Length: 179
Image 1 (cartoon, rainbow, N blue to C red):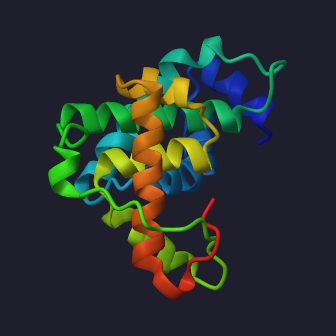
Image 2 (image 1 turned 180 degrees about the vertical axis):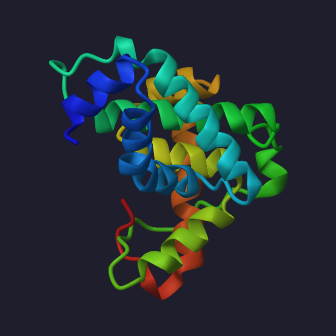
């Protein structure tokens, strides 16, 4: 089934089309959820909430605006952030969880394996990891991040800088010009 056929079927509440949408896009959405640090049984909770919202709001998707994948990613990111808000992981005392380190110079990850980078990213406090993912990976602006997380754009910049510094420090010899 093509995406237009799947969308048409989903809008008619066709279970086969809903299943096709789920199976086609689940790996992509799981990667987003895991990248934000959701693990264990919480992953399935976020997946269920995400697909529930997708099916409820699918009538609002306009294929003329663009492909469905970015729309699905946006819903997934919002559901993941709601999960963090609900489980209170977003509001940890960041100064205590990870003290500020200013000495790191700009460097880019060059030879580090993707697994090593993701492992270190997942070790960051959730608030730092969320801002890093939203800004660096998903392309949100600091103003948008501030609105999503209920912080100022300056707070977003600060968390991003601390996340970058922590990653540079933790990745050590792998790090050169971290974006």
